[in-house]
Length: 267
Image (cartoon, rainbow, N blue to C red; front, side):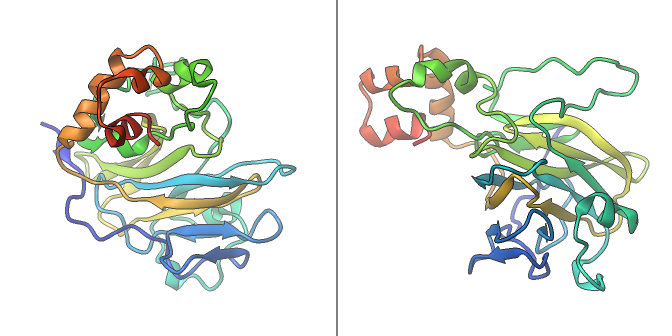
């Protein structure tokens, strides 16, 4: 039976230790690179619990740089680092006990062992994402484009995999799933889809911190708080409504209270 992930955990935020070019807001939930394209390494404030996802949304982009957001895990306490590495790849990884995944515009999925082709995408209507024995409420995991005059053009994205991985408002998370042998697999989740085990054999018994490298064309990210437990009735209603409408603008014609219409359109 699948287990709920990390109920009752403190609010997620960034660690006080970070790269020289990063500025955090007062709540430490928004990280912005203020110059150059590197020296923007961030960590989670606390080690993650098994199955707990550290989720960020891309808030700002900076054209002209080559490369995108990088995320991962490290067994190194950020406070123990003599200096924050300039890059997550290769600098942090070369120190050992760190695993980092470079997000790209495409080809992010990791094929399961023994398979040459990536797994087919499943429907995103299920209220929970299942990763091995871990289940996570899917609603907050999916980044959405804002509906507008031409929303019908974006319907296929809206109904399947809302945004490209590196786009503004895309949501990217990292977690680890324990294995029976005492190790763990690192999983990257992009807009509600599990990309597969991007690293195996992680030391599940050691504290594992999330790594977020606000690199190159990604200029600013913010932490998204994930509510664990059973989905709310409001969320379940939204899933049913979205599944049966032609496109987002059709929600305006439904006999629903305006706040619920906005909620259904992710406004």
